[in-house]
Image 1 (tube, rainbow, N blue to C red):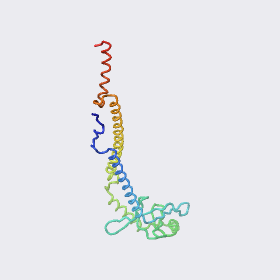
Image 2: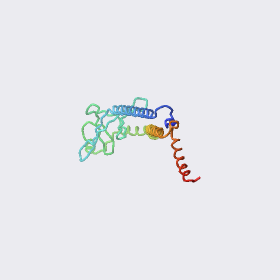
Image 3: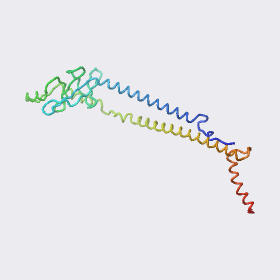
Image 4: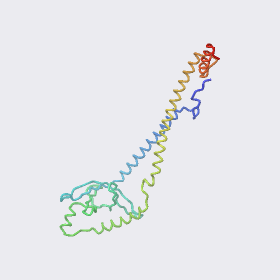
Length: 238
């Protein structure tokens, strides 16, 4: 009796092609849901950046707007104190109080790199006209306090990659393995189907050449062994 290679299917009577299709659909759903979740997360992060900060600087003896940044609230401690965090500059500044438009707080970058919230006017020109080096004591003390507070808060804190790098690596590894398994299942299903078709054709061919009582590949092998033996007997070779 002929043996079909489908009988050696490691998953029994289950269709390997169907398993591969199911795995592919599952991982596609996971990727789609992950993409939707990531889009929602990015949307929520953008909504937090609700403060617009046009940044001006003296270029060519006149103030020029060099960039426009967005800032978000950054809570400090448990007393309700809030700073502003500018992600693009990775800079923490005190809350602005002077607006030129809804949620728009223009800042001027001084020669020493300090950001000052202002309305209109050239702060550098005013300081030079007064012939003094103007130091905003409140801003300077706040900057020193912010520096010390952030140093204490983030001391010994792990970076994002140090904290989640191993998890990201494992997820990528399992995704690669899962995709490889899907491809192998699909290819194995095609090989099984093609081999079964080939075996059926061989059975039909052997049944047409051999007696009905013998089936399979074994009679064909027997014919190849018998024919040379008959030639030798005819030639008188023992």
